[in-house]
Amino acid sequence: MALGILVVDDEKLIVKGIKFSLEQDGMTVDTAYDGEEALRLAKEKEYSLILLDVMLPKIDGLAVCQMIREFSQAPIIMVSAKGDDIDKIMGLEYGADDYITKPFNILELKARIRAILRRSAVRKGPRREAKASVTIRGLEIQPGARRAFIAGKEVNLTVKEFDLLELFMENPGKVYGREDLLGLIWGQEYPGDVRTVDVHVSRLREKIEDNGSDPKYIITKWGVGYYFDI
Image (cartoon, rainbow, N blue to C red; front, top):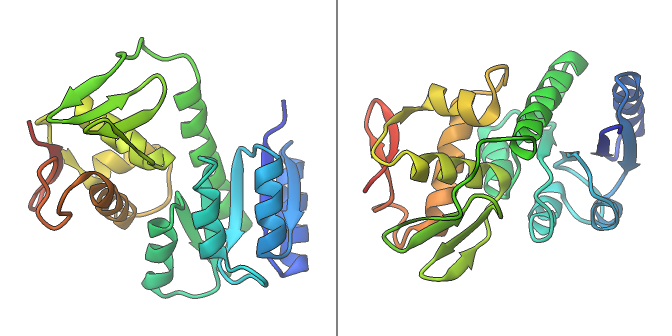
């Protein structure tokens, strides 16, 4: 079955080039040229991945990303014409899994797409028997259902946020370096950098910690990485 990709950009020539290149690799590609159309398609169909530009007519890409996260965990790659780190960080903060800056090489884009899809396939494919649940100090995850709860109240996590939390909670006390987490969660061939890890950990803390600046679950071991405190 062909992978379904949604490409969203108001620059039609860019969309046409990306669509052609991905279809050459056997993927099926839908396109949208504004935020409203992107949101409608994302609600109507289940995509393997969404490539979403930041600057869009009607509804901007960051808002679209945030709204998609309310009903879908499909991997999202944000595309920005700006080189500012703040755009990249905001994309991750709003629930994107990765980002790429224009102008980009189509080969780099396809490498990022493959890395995310490969990780997604591993997550959905055959795996060791998952524990029914793991609970530590009021924080519970259900790996099979991919759900998380704090004091019985469900927490809405993105794909990568859940992957990180599951890894930490199933290996409490073990310190993971940023490079280790990048390889384990995003895949060894992922071309991004370790700031992606920091942003996702920060966002995860905001959702599970009483005070993100003074965490009690996910602790920073300065100069080394992160671990889940037991």
